[in-house]
Length: 55
Image: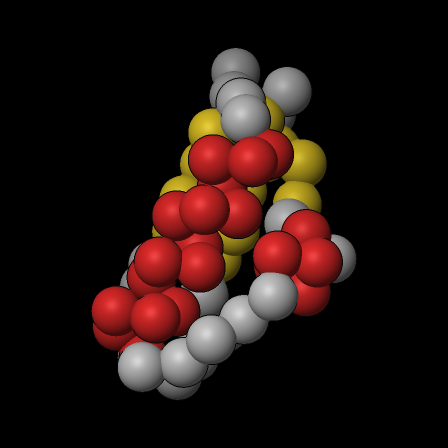
């Protein structure tokens, strides 16, 4: 089972999917910082991460 995060900012198509929840959090935080100039806590991202089938 994979974990995924999709950016909710308008016109942003960022999507990350990984088997590692921690990797998704790390990459999502880097995306928010680099692409949108913002900061977000790991717990906030963890709350919106979805579980996805990889089949």
